[in-house]
Amino acid sequence: MKQKKLTAIFAVLCIIVGIMVLFNLLRREAARGSDLDKEIQRLQSEIDKLESRNSALIGLTKELSDLDFLENEARVKMGLKMPGEEVVVINRATSSIINNQENQETKNPSLWENPKRWLRYFFNKR
Image (cartoon, rainbow, N blue to C red; front, side):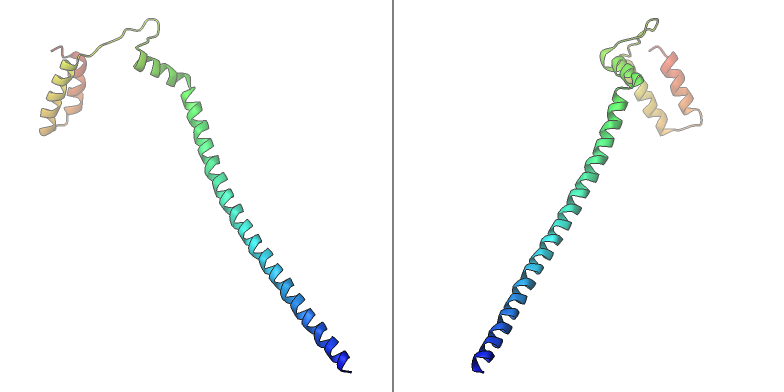
C-alpha cells in the first residue's frame, strides 16, 4: 500500500514536472513567434521604403533620359545649339545695370514695373 502511494505521488510529480516543461517550451515558442512577427513587420516597412525610393529613382531616370531635358542641359551646360539658332551672350556688367535699375524700381513699385523690365531687358543697349 505504501508502495502504491509512493508510485502515485511520483507519477503525479512527474506529470506536474512534465506540464511545467511543456508550458516553458510553449512560452519560448510564443516569444520566438512574436520576435519573428516583429522582424517581419520591420522588413516589410524596409521593403516599402525601398520600393518608394526605387519608384522615385525610376521617375528620375525617366526625367533625365527625356529628350527635352537632355537638349536643355546641352544648351545650358555645353553651349550647344540647334541648326538655325543663334547664341546670345549677356555680359555681367549689363546684367548688373539691369539689376540695379530693377532694385531702384522695387522701391517705387508701379503697375507697369514688370513690362518695363522686359522692355529694358530686350531693347535697352547700355
